[in-house]
Length: 524
Image 1: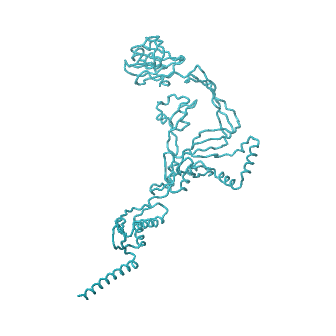
Image 2: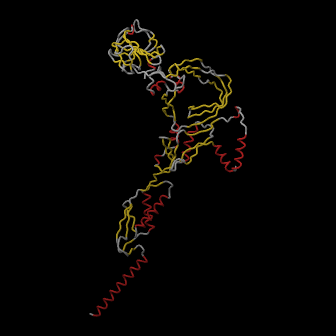
Image 3: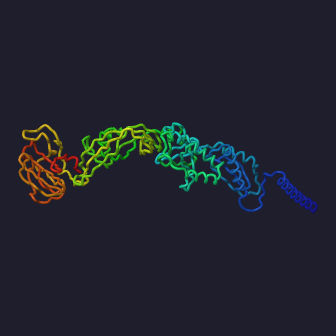
């Protein structure tokens, strides 16, 4: 019995020794076996998109493997890469656990990344011109687009576009500048060869040279300066490939003309038909855009602004050209002011005659449209005779339509007599409307006549400042008396059908200096 006990104890000791040796052997020979040394999670298994990748001893190791795998994938392309990945890590506390080789884990992670990666974002440039913007694939395409806008006018290929940082923007934003190619080359040469002292001395001698009048052959002709009319902004970005516009399509978008509303200031002597010829815009289009112009007989005044449409591309080019001209020219109109006339009155005192000259002109354009013209030098071959116009300076009183509504039945001027006794030279305008309709004073003044007026039937005459008179005829009832003062818009009568009349209507006259004028030209 005692002998058995001794053998049993020896057997226990041997088993313990074998277990210790086995554990040490596993520790040194098999590195994938993890031995727990402290409490808490010490064994981590991670999954990508629900696929098991493997196990490690720490989360930090998983993070490092993920980072290395990203570098492997992204390093294969210059563009941004989108990887759709869902990472899940499960931690455990174990005594023993098998961990995977880092190289194997890296290859597995990189494989999953490769399967789920899409190079969706591409390096590109967004070009913005006011409200218009377009995305292009490279800075070279941006230059090609902007140069295409110049090509229509820069037929000698003397200018080019440069992309420079915009100093007025906090963010890194580029803008476009247009330079003459030879100026860029000269500037580079000067910087390389010319010292500051030499440049200073040269400038002094240039300033001392006496000014000599140049002959026509001494001038440099052609484009002197070019710029874009709109602010051009260029920003680098990473975009989806489908949002990038092909260069040829972008050029077509930017250079194609579209209709843009613009203001035209009426010049002295302008007529509606003259403006049509000058702007090449149909008369019905001008009437459509300007509510106060009813038809071709509407009056326009110098200084008035009309809305017109002009063809313009998305990106407009402004340029200044110096040209030699052999041209017919007109002298500037000479105005003689008459303080006793209204500004609506004028008279031609001398008809013009066209002259002829050789000239050097500096002309500014916006696209095809001439904006300004300056004559630098001229040789007059035949003197132009100026047009002389006498014009009034007094601002005329305002007039409103004396009735509400009504249908215009007879205009001012020559007409066929509507009935026996009626004038064929109509001194006013007629509006047809029911008997008893309200008639108001077109402007404030003094009633000079209120009563029967023969063929006019019942009439009212009102005298206004500046020798202006209004007349209201064929009335059914008079509500004011001679000598009374009335205000603009005050009720003065009821319309009717009295006197020589073909039906219920109001005859309205406007006289200036004793002569009848077309009332429709003065009514607000």
